Image (cartoon, rainbow, N blue to C red; front, side):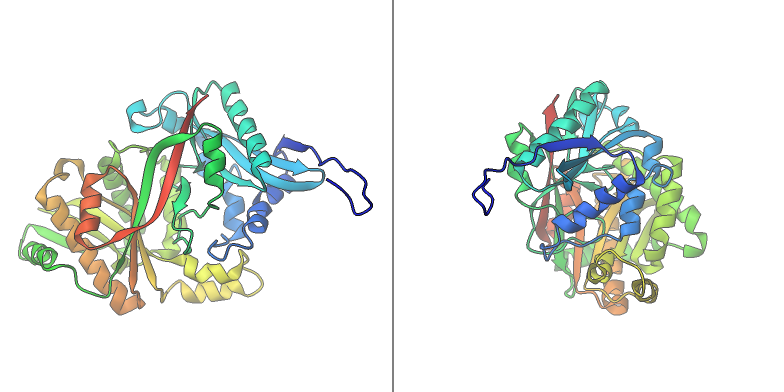
Length: 393
C-alpha cells in the first residue's frame, strides 16, 4: 500500500481475539449494522434483541451450548466477527439427522474481505478442534431454529421475520476453504389474493364436511398451554427430520414469551381429528416490514410506533415458519387435507383482516417431499435458498 507521500505502508495485521467484555459484545453487534448498511434489502434487527442473542443468562441456548465469539481487527478497527459453538442437544442426536457426536458449528459471520474471512473461519475451526469436534456444519446462527445457512438465492428482496440475509460474496469464500453442501433449505412464496386450484378447493370442501375434523384458532387466553401443545406436536412431527434438535423446557418458555406480541389467534391453527390435536400451522405477520425503517433502534420514538403496530398489523406478507402433523398421520391423505384446510383458513384471514397479499412458507428441507408437494399444489415457487455447509475438521 502506498500513502499520498509515496511512502510504502504495510497493511495492518489481522488479529483475531475472543470476545471477553461488554464492550466487545457491543462491537460484535455493531459490526453487522456497519457492514450491511449499503444493502437495501438487509433488515437491521432490533439492537436489544441482537445483544440478547449473544448474552449468557438471557438466551437459553447458552444453557446447553458452549459458545465462543471472536472479533477480527486491523489495528484499532473491527473488520469481522464469528461465533463458534457446540450445541450439546444437537451432538446428542443421531448422526443420520445431520448433527450427532463431534459436530460443531460457527455462525453470526461478517467479514470485510476474504483475508478476514479466512482468519475468522480458521479461528472458529481451531476452537472447535480444541473441544474435540471432528466436523463442522455452518453457518448456523446460533441454533438451527434461528438463522441457518448462507443465502444463495433471493438477494433481490428483504427477508421475512426470522430469516437470514447474507451477502452473496460470502458463498465463494466458504467454498474456497473446503466447505461442501450438507443441505439446502428453501422458502416458497405465493400470491394469496386468489383462490387455490380447483382440486385443492375440493379437498378443503371435503374436509369441511367431515365431522371428525375440526380446525380451530389458538386461544391466546390459554397461551402457555397452547404453546406447549404446538411444541409437543412439533417435536413429534419433526423428530425424524434432518437437523432436528429438541427444544429445552427453558427454550419453550422463552419462545412463548418472545412470540406472544406477534401471535394473533386467527393466524395460528390447530387441527383436531376425533378430538385429538394432530396438526398445527403457525403464521406470523412480517415484523420485518415494521422494523426495517427503524434501523435497529426502538428509542426515542420507534417503540411507540411498534406498540401501535403489533395489535393490528397491516402487512403485505405473512410467513409460515412452522407447521407439523403428528408422525402417525404423516404420508396419509388426511395429513395433506389438514394442511390445505389450515392454509386456506389462514389465507382468508390474512387478506380480510391484515390486508396481506403475499405468503411465504419455510424454510423447507430440499428433500421434504410432503411439504414440497404441498407448496407445489398451491402454486407457490421458491424465492429464497439457503445452503448449510459441512467440512471435516
